[in-house]
Length: 148
Length: 83
Image (cartoon, rainbow over all chains, first blue to last red; front, side, top):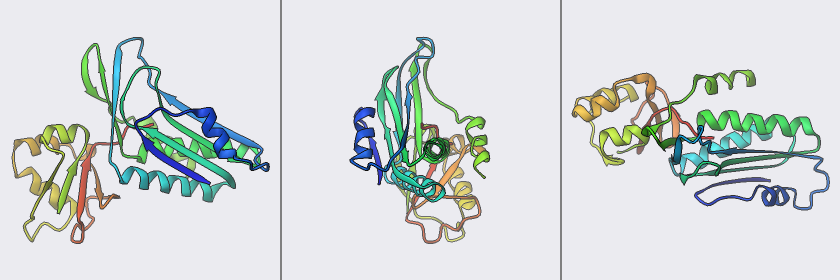
């Protein structure tokens, strides 16, 4: 079961994990990753995420399909928020479910690495020093290499 | 053809989307970028650094040599920063 949502509302990680398992008693492991807005030592007041409606969902679908091809998964949830968020707010949730933990760990990590480099989201920070768009990091692109 | 812009490219150009009719000799992504730069300072500023431009043709990533002949929507945006 692949469950992909792009939304402005908050999500409930525990409820999403239960939904994903939804009575499948063969699932032996779920690995959940949640990404949050950092306060950057109280210098950030808010963060606004913009995205490309339509392409975002397409890219997330593609990444999820690739993860399913690589590992025997029993479920995969990807939820990403957009709009204005505050320090401490959750931004992204990835939950991978499989029979054994290794596949769930790998799939969740793979999805996050590709999401960071391919899903069309952009972060703008509002803080003490004014407003600025976050620049992409080379380390995020390099993270893709170990999946070759 | 519709052009859509995101993030600081949208802010620098000053619009989020526009309809454009291209000269017949503009057939590739790199040709499109060169043509847009001829339209004014705001385009020149937004599109100055090719390494900071990502292009999607009908919501699929594309490179500089890709044809835009059958494209209906082309997006121009900086490297993505989600997650």
